[in-house]
Length: 146
Length: 147
Image (tube, rainbow over all chains, first blue to last red):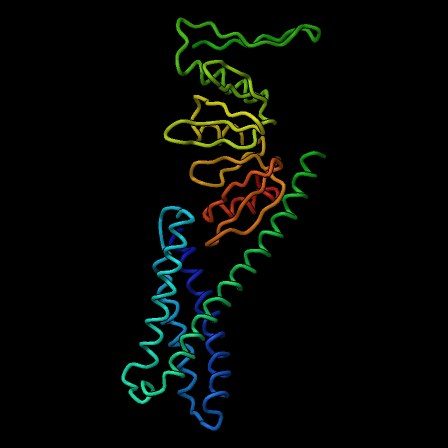
């Protein structure tokens, strides 16, 4: 993967994750603390978690074409890093939550769901591209055969 | 090497004759070029030499400094380098889809997504070929008529 492609991927992932973090905060907020009011600073949270969650994408970078096994190993490593970094960013210094494992587990599950949904979105984008290329391929072959 | 061109009558068969002191690599390259232009590649299988029609070749792969021609049922080794074949076979709808592979676009049935931004070319034979993400844009351009 080249640097340019990797950067484009990183930016795309960032915005996908920010959107999904917004959804997760909305759902979890309504569930755990529906009465809490926030100021404008609340808009920072999805951006920060988006950046922290996108950072582990670095483990997917490789100049060489990775084998399926290597890709799988890196995907697992990437997911573990996302969990650790986002949980750290969310709960470091907030001792009050340590007494409420339910909230920590819920955030952990949310991270997993965001990871899965982001991967599905990525796959759908590639599926649409592949379908478009197949249509172009059929037209190309018809053109060549005359 | 002196080059002579001789115009002949329409009824006579066209031919190319190379007169040389020795069959060098350069001479072989010229022969290969002519054969490729005529739609044939020279392949070796179990020590025997075969003329393989370009149209029958599904893909060409470089493995450990050797280059192989893959038809639907047979595999032949060829002396030519992958980059030479890439240049020669551009007009025959062959396109590089990874560092070590040239794909005959006329033998591809469909394209599917694979892991990490890569794609899979499903051949008419059912075989699957990985398209590296580096070459995806070139493939898109080729399919739109840029080959």
